[in-house]
Length: 249
Image (tube, rainbow, N blue to C red; front, top):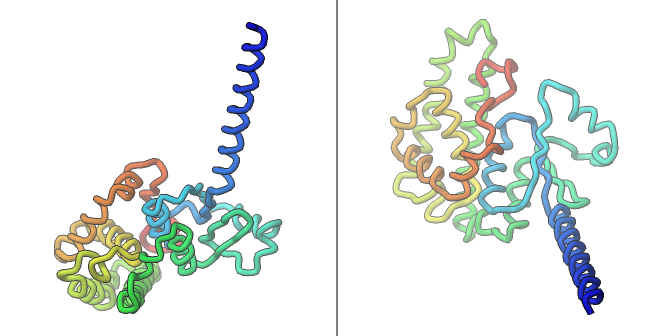
């Protein structure tokens, strides 16, 4: 009798072990792979979004000073992907490229289409704000791309004339709103937060001049998933941009 009990126990243990192994394998298959350089860049808002919707994912951070990414492009499977670019998401056998497409893919993959706008009207507002945020992003990137010899003399004037007015416009637009597009959190909030982080790092204290942006920034940091991410070892604090490629990173 004891012999049969022992054999039965062994079988049960093997079944449980196999079940755990299958579960772990399935979990790994369900995990997304998010690929980008080992900087914040245009990928940081997407990292926030992945954390917020709590999709299991792993980060593939390519060293921007090395040739790993470009070497990967020459080999399977990336050499079979016509649109291959950074950032990307690999979901099983599926590859998705281009940052704007990734926002949409993540929202649908997490069954959170509301993050793209909960109504036709809100979707229009989201697209309008996205345009303003990209204007702001491009203006700032042009600022830090000023030739090194001219940068010390021109940076303040350029910031005042080409960047600051867009910040002021955005600050006025979100006045009285809970989030960027209205009462609901949408994917543009994740992009806006990263710009707020960028400007606060570039000019410490600048958000104190724009109370609506400060309120948005502080509220976003209190979202539980974001708060946990910001204090985790997955969070990249710096650099914002490629080191030594531009005047600030």
